[in-house]
Length: 491
Ligand SMILES: Cc1cc2nc3c(=O)[nH]c(=O)nc-3n(C[C@H](O)[C@H](O)[C@H](O)COP(=O)(O)O)c2cc1C
Ligand code: SF4
Image 1 (tube, rainbow, N blue to C red):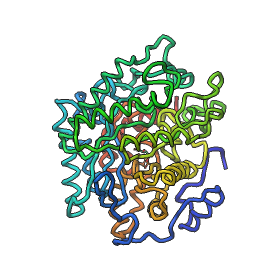
Image 2: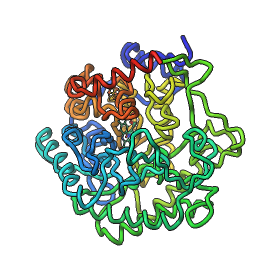
Image 3: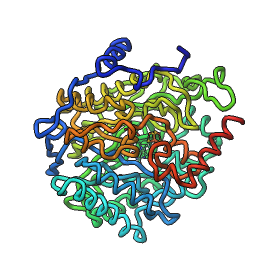
Image 4: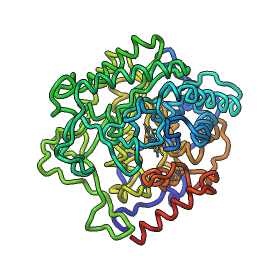
């Protein structure tokens, strides 16, 4: 077997074959032989958090499409994606997609922005989910819908898809080098941050007026909220001690709570992070990315630049500060946490285990099932320590046909409260309803983790499931993406 070449999920014969491979990997992953249906199915059990009763244990993760208007309003593609979220039958729509609280915080020029001009169209997205959900399931009982609010920090590209216009909180020896940030590049001032907090509060008021049940205060994936948590070297009110590094989160919660009585909160948290990875230059040939290897940590040890990262070995994680942040969340009366890992920009194998890398990624440095296992273990450790929290796990899509078996087992055994679906909902939106109703599993729709939904936007093309969703397969953009991939192979 070549380095980076791991057995595909489709090569395992049934649950027994899948289990045998997990045993070879030393991964003790819960997996049920038979997926039940009906009211006794653990995934069908309702759960109440912060007075919100959520009708089943499937959550749809926020999934953006790089397909809004320049102004930040949804387009037909955006509406179609949200409609499919509603049709899924999942009772928790955790955030919809990342919506910037202001223009300069957009991750791409077509990211949605919450503003006076876009508010009613964003309210329309919520209504679309409800209507589609009712049509697919007959009612909208116990359907809970949140909106993810974001500022993209180090990964802002508000005006031009090829040009980062970073907003950084501190100088990061590895990421600054990786993403070419010049030595004299400014960091955001405390005054900038206070103004940004006001923008979040305004955006949250708009989200509440749209009817969203909660707002997600995004603290993940290398974006601004997440960067605060590792700002140990930043002086002033927002850096250094954990108290200072969580000031942004605490000010957001207090400000929004005062301005939006009754609005609930969730936090999407990258619970752990590792140093950035890159394709092994020694094993890369034109058009074929090498397997991922860690960037050099020379000059960056002890590694104080990660959150949930082992300072002595930044290729390993350490949950101690994550536990402390959960204590902060508890003190803020926030109990809904969507747990994710790392960043899709610099260690995508951590965030989205996949067989095939996105165009700016690398071949898997480990069997992606170990990546899924890492997600499960982190959530399990958090749930064991904080049973009063309601947790949503991520990274399940790579499980493919075994997703229902593992999903049922982890919920049944209390490893997580919700199973979140990301890429799978793009290719196979009706998976939750198929599972809940015991309908046949539709193999043709299973996301095979080709990563085209990431490679397309990395190359300035709207996102979508190009390989499996006929809507995108037949589009002009499909041809553009094929041309980009061909050019990369011959470069
Ligand atoms: C096309 C695409 C768009 C995404 N958009 C968002 C987003 O807007 N907000 C967010 O927190 N995560 C976003 N993610 C990450 C997913 O929510 C999810 O964490 C990730 O895909 C792993 O889950 P999965 O294995 O089910 O795909 C996105 C991922 C993809 C592939
Ligand atoms: S493009 Fe489709 S098959 Fe590929 S990873 Fe995205 S959702 Fe999955």
